Image 1 (cartoon, rainbow, N blue to C red):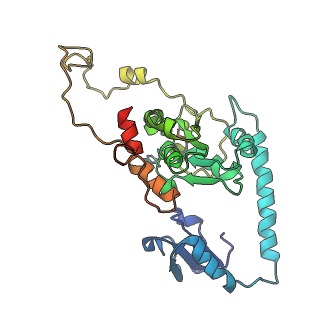
Image 2: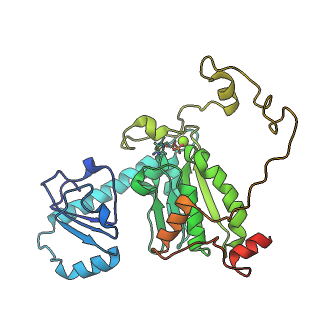
Length: 311
Ligand SMILES: Cc1ncc(C[n+]2csc(CCOP(=O)(O)OP(=O)(O)O)c2C)c(N)n1
Ligand SMILES: [Mg+2]
């Protein structure tokens, strides 16, 4: 990309502008359905607001095939070399397992129409590098490439948007701990509604909730194995890692309902409608190509939400 003469950015908010061509070295053209994204990361000359596919189709007749193919051939060669490097890295032995091998082997085994999601963390590297997406598949990585915790909610959103397709979330243990585990409650609540109930979650458990963050290099360095630093068990965290001066106390001692004190009934709260919120709702909307999707929305007694209430 650093050697291009024209940079075409399509539907992207790629945040690491240091990897884009130097300003002035390339002419920038950007397409986005949201005008606010245009020119955000690079001083683009032509800013096109619109649906990416339709806009690209409109631009196609303006392309001229270059007679000099050398730059294109050079890029093709570099890509072929890169795939060899990726395979070599995947074949490196590691204890207990080399995650790149997992992704490498997963790639050809993926169902044709599966929907993949990935989270921030090392999973994002292997997702981007080791998987070869085939036509018909869909894939989503954390918006802006930088927010943790989207992997499982995106997969849930995918199941609502396309209930007949397998969704596969590829996430780290940190992301899984952050909200993925809690989102399994959502899966347990809704999976019966999906024509094909399969939602697969692959967790890279390196016992490190901050591998990439610690490396601080955006995942550029080659990560060997998944040894990471051992994460202290939550129980020992509570016992040994208390801030100094923080008094040791029995959490249940003075809090009714946590095992200590007199039990009393929890205050009743009004029942709320259940439907995917936040990232899940936004991603379902996005996957549907902008069409309004509110899977759990009240649809009268005979609607899906009505059935859910009846259950
Ligand atoms: C809300 C939020 N907090 C922190 C970060 C910085 N961050 C990005 S990846 C990552 C580590 C993710 O850990 P894990 O899910 O276990 O993946 P690993 O890299 O260990 O495989 C952190 C802390 C972030 N991007 N977003
Ligand atoms: Mg981890």
